[in-house]
Length: 268
Picture 1 (cartoon, rainbow, N blue to C red):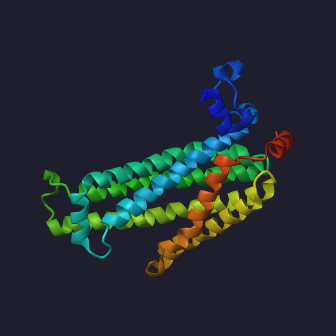
Picture 2: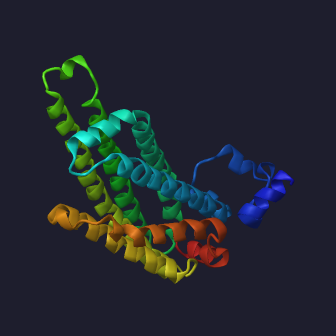
Picture 3: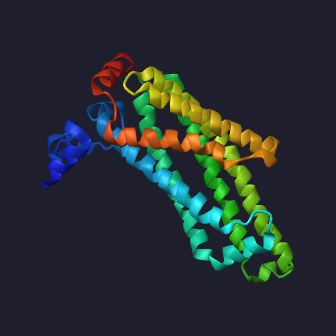
């Protein structure tokens, strides 16, 4: 298949040869002017990156940490981490890839939702930046869980049981750090849900789903902090459904161009 025809089938009529946009070739900055020329393209890029975020997140949490961590059993957890050190490191790397992808997604969503309410879109971007920063720093706890189990000279003053306990403590700190980061993301989902609902160029269903996701994130995180014995990851299932729906909609549908451009022209 011709390359241009393939890209047109994926991104719609907004795709053109780069040679037809000499001004864009010399200025690759994501400005509102550039964005207005191809919002559908950026929407699809955001959707694909969002899908990658979901895949990386599921891999790191469900296929790595849930597989290796034995909650309540310090020795078994330490043994699993040491026996699967490379998998543990791959899980951390997947999380970091997820957070790297967060940045372009949040910027694109800011531009997509800016016509609805500029101040709320900026507030949403701010919450998103905070949650990403918190979650990235929180990865140090996962590295610490591994470092405490290494046979290094500076750890000789600790007994094996103490090191196993410190490693396990690091994984618990990661759980709570993750919950704290998701408080900010809960507000992201609530704001995005409102903006999607009011936009008219996204389906209202997406807005409702994202709002429900925000409530679930907030509930789960505060339950984890206040009454951790009642914390249950199944509470986050609506979040998975909402975010997967959003990513797929962005990939295959994007935005209603005529309505988006009309809204954007009124809110420059």
